[in-house]
Amino acid sequence: MHRLLERIADLYTPVRLRGLLMDGLYQTALHDKGIARMNTSRITFHHAPNSRSGSTLMLLEELGAQYDMHVMDLTRGEQREPTYLRVNPMGKVPAIEHLGGLVTERPAIFAYLADLHPEAKLAPAIGEPLRGPYLRWLSFYGSCFEPAVMDRFMKNPAAPVSTCPYGSFDMVMDQVEAQLTAGPWLFGDRFTAADILWASSLDWTMKFGIVPRRDVFEAYVARFMVRPAIVRAVAQDAALARSHALAAA
Image (cartoon, rainbow, N blue to C red; front, side):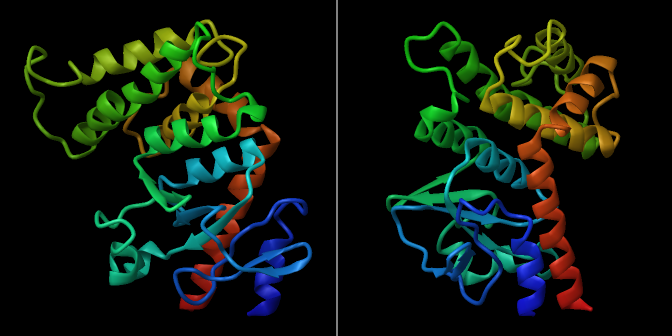
């Protein structure tokens, strides 16, 4: 088991603390100098591999953030166990804890973490012209894209455009395509945390055949997936998924 954890730890950058799957909710975490205990001044990241929370792992890597990771296995229903439900009663990932506060919902998590690390320049500051559009597109994801995608996936009958919160599925897709057309990112040359949310989500939903494979979407995702921090996060998530599979074997 220790050798397996060491192999996973090798995927992590040496200068930043990384959390690994250990016993208990507030588990210990490995880093380059040995063992460290989680504390409330650090970010605690509640995560499950092969889930939506993978995008938050990507963001943490892009930010160069220090964090402790509490890893759960969704196939075993660990996110529904009482210990985690005391953290997030919805039993969903991702969630982060910082300074004694809980943040859930990816648009909120992304806004919080990007503002927490201004040195990474992944969030336009208050007063910058892009601040409003940046918040708009974080919110548009949660209020329009995700509901539209889930309605399409569940094959729910379409509501009238006048009463549907997101208008229609095609309207949402057209809005996203129009925003990305100038490229290379949502806001031209400015890469932000919003790009991590959107590119990772487009990648996942296209793979599942929910979102159509429009050329603009595919080119956007392809640019995103080769970024070093994203490659690193994908490798970490895959290693955690393999560790769950080996544990279950």
